[in-house]
Image 1 (cartoon, rainbow, N blue to C red):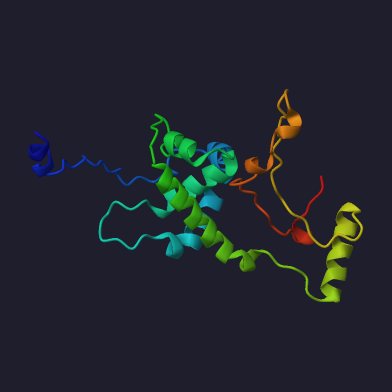
Image 2 (tube, rainbow, N blue to C red):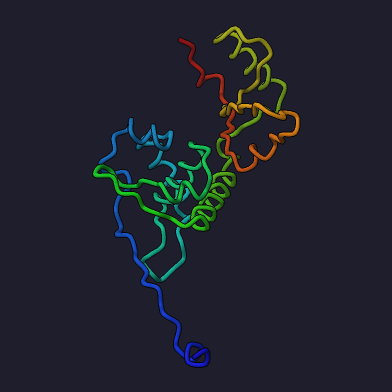
Length: 196
């Protein structure tokens, strides 16, 4: 019996492929912002910016599209959830909603690829004042605009509240909760700040 099983050819799993669909079609800007923290214009900008880095060199037509890769990564960044949860629950189609499952490994590779592509372009968007004259001009701009003295930049990020366990609080290690969380860091130019 064991010999007969060993000689049988392996059974191929049936693979299913997603039809190429525009992931932004049908969503309003408000819905896109709720899910990905970017509107249509920002998502299109990211797609154009990162397209050359994220396009998969394959002769098959089943690679994940650049817009889908960006949405997977943005969903991970914006939700702070686990890779497996993102892959299991990602909705990339407008109503009627259809959950498109992605393997954890696919989500992980996609998030890494998108993150690397964004970081590679950080120098285009994050500028640090190098000369003392530039620093003085920015300090003056922040002060005139918002009455903040001695400010030469600002960082945007996300604060995540961590609730302490009710028993044995000292034994709990919070550092593992910080691994894998994405936070956006960017430099603000004084001209971009508007106080209302």
